[in-house]
Image (cartoon, rainbow, N blue to C red; front, side, top):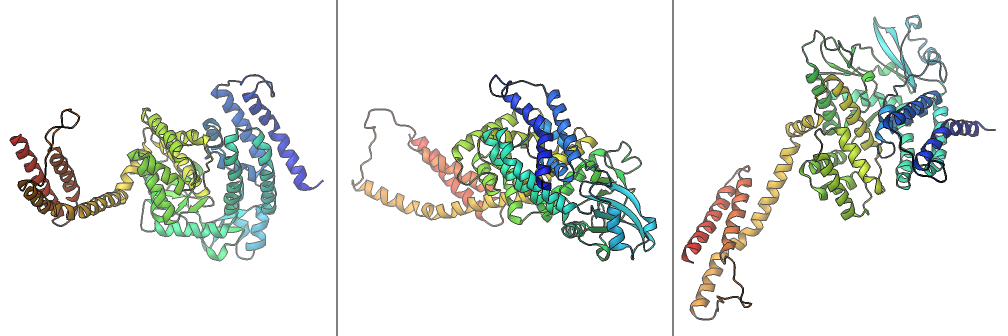
Length: 522
């Protein structure tokens, strides 16, 4: 029996009790009977058992659990909360001894008698070692791990048809796409060269910002299995005394975390995607120290623009633009029934407005829950942004329970000019409309003069009574509408340099006087 088949059967055997439990939630006696109703505590206990099973199955399944923690389109919120606690607590000798890798690749360059263990993760282990009179950190990939990961990824892919039997039909689309996402994210984490480049780019982006510290890499000691970097220490961000004696409050640190991650994602386009407490620390100088760039992403400018558009659509409660943004981000298929999706999104906005407290997690949960009747997916780059938002918001709220992530987002977009650029676009559109209308307005006096001449010669008949005998409304109301519309356009154009606002305001005044004079004569 091949290693793949044995592994597949072992995994199926470990998860079979959970599959039966989920089936019984839908039909108490598997094939018949009504659904079971379990309280949240029962689901949490089941989620904790699933989390422990993932830990026991090894690195690939730890990563699967971490990814599922940010996929509310697949797992309910209580399961996502529990899976988010997977923190790579894997024994050092799991998958082979990483020290053997250090001895093989750096035995001639380092004094290995100074090698000390720092921490272990699902894919790598971290040591410190003396180097050129200082201590550096070595992130070492577990030996023989890549073939194991690739085998387990094949197992996960082979499990998808089986899992589809135990889930609602509308979730099958998300699960099939999630299998592709698992593979991309996990293989990216195994690529230490990619991680080194990302870390270097983020460090360069914040090199002049004393609020943030990112370790520098030692390229001469790094390879595809080892990432060497400065060994920097700090207090764990969520420790009770993390900010003791420092000139920074918990609220200020929470705002700093949120702002730094927004800057990484929306301005720089390269971001650290795993801001759990184990990867964030505070230095003795009060700076935010960021570790472990294995889970990271680069965002093209187009995607960043689409994300800003998504936020603007939510703020303006513009359902049409919200649908456009979700399609642009590849969350929804371009051929989706836009009218039907729009009605669902209107309910999402209404439900959020009815809450006393709106959080990032609440928005994502509400959005993905309501969209489950449609084929939709969360692409890897968007999924990692969702993870940054949900995990980062959790850290910020541990620092400051009253922290409002959405307020920080709004302020950040204003400070970075995203909102101003949107306003400029609105003004430009209004000015274009005014320019198109101006020729017609300038020709109005001549047309009015010709019409009066025709009336004087008896060539134009003005009907004074409605044909159907019903009373006519205000015949001069059009002047008032023009005056009001031009006044609004003038107020918008005041943000632009030049005489445009004055010209439009003058035209508004002309139509207003015309309306008042006409009203006086009736």
